[in-house]
Every structure is written in C-alpha cells, then in structure tokens.
Image (cartoon, rainbow, N blue to C red; front, side, top):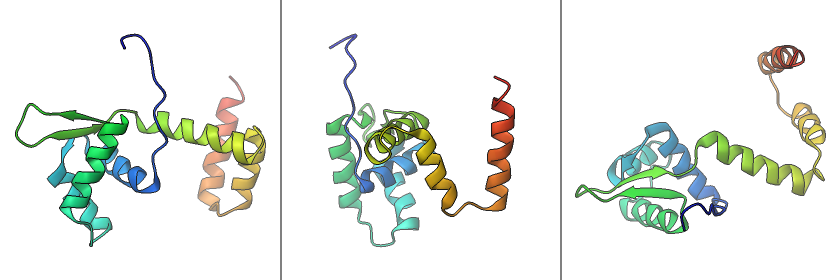
Length: 129
C-alpha cells in the first residue's frame, strides 16, 4: 500500500549476522554473501544462505533485484535505523524505558579506557547543544 509504512519484524540472531554482512558488502548475490559468511562460519552452506535470504526477503527485511540471472539482495533498513529500533525495544523491555539505566549498565561492563575517553568527548561535544 503506497504511503502506508509497515513495521518490519525483528531479525533473529542468524538474520542479524546476514544483515551485518549485507551492510558491509552492499547489495550482493547469494554467492557473494555465502563467500563472506564462510569467513565467519566455515560450515555455512550455500543452500542455507540462499534459504535464509529468501525467508528474510519474504519477511520484508531484504529487497531482491531479479533483473539479472543471479538475484541481488540488499538490506531494506539502514544499519543505524535497525540498531536504534532494537535498542529502543531493549530499553523499554529491560530498563523500564530508562536510557540512563541502560548506559549505566553498559558502563559497568567491559569498556576500555579508549572507549571511555571517546564517550567523554561525545558528552562534552553534545552538552553544548
């Protein structure tokens, strides 16, 4: 339906792995995605990657260009948009809607000195806004 936006389903962990590959590679054929996934998961089969991409296309997570013999798949949603959506769900479900509580929990975890310095710079830069 034109003009009506529908909410995309949340990807499974396996789907997120493929989305990360597609965000990195850009629009890609099944062969290209499979070859990239073999670097991370040596046992991944072409048939499994093909089936996962087809399912993700059916769910609306991927677009598919069928003009060429080898179909080209691409993520429908930008990486930062999906991350923001998933983070919003996490904040709502696990932290009762408190972004502050999420940040405090994250900072209690594994944060390097370099990451802390980067966070501090970000806070200083945005405090003027």
